Image (cartoon, rainbow, N blue to C red):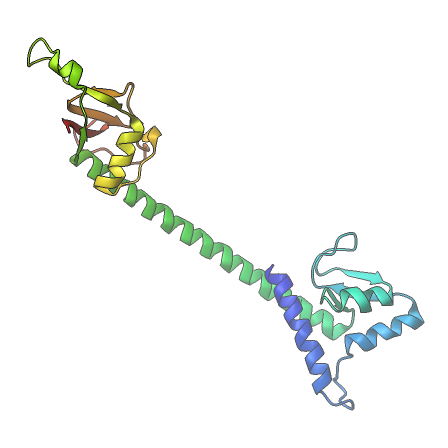
Length: 225
């Protein structure tokens, strides 16, 4: 893209310069449109492609085309320039500069990607610590019928509806302002009763665990509403 951009820019400048220079100047370059008219006599013109053209050639290649094709298609779209020494030299120089620009752009992208990855890892580590040190509190309605039917006060208090993985993910976002996915929460079965739980978290292995811990966890407390 950089080569195409510079090739077309130099062609625009060439056309502009040919209109500015005096007609008597010895170093005046031939206007591409005047060059195209010569093809009527020679039947074919040699042109240098400023960008790759399907079924014709690649950028930088010299090809022969019909005068009308150059005049009506290639020239208006700045896809080619006449194969004259001065044009060829300018295109060659701009190609060198364009390749350097492309290399610089690629290098810049790599640096940005590396910084972004490092920033992402720091954000993951910070979020993991918040989850590990926090306690999520959920208030849920209980099943009153079963509550009244309990044999003893030590019997578990069942919830009217279970707490699911999706509930935990939503509450983490609301209470702790941390975005996690359902697959980050290891909950073999929904939570059915009031009480305190320690839910296992499945976080990327690249996030280092604190000393003494073997896995990331989230403390969850469910209270009767």
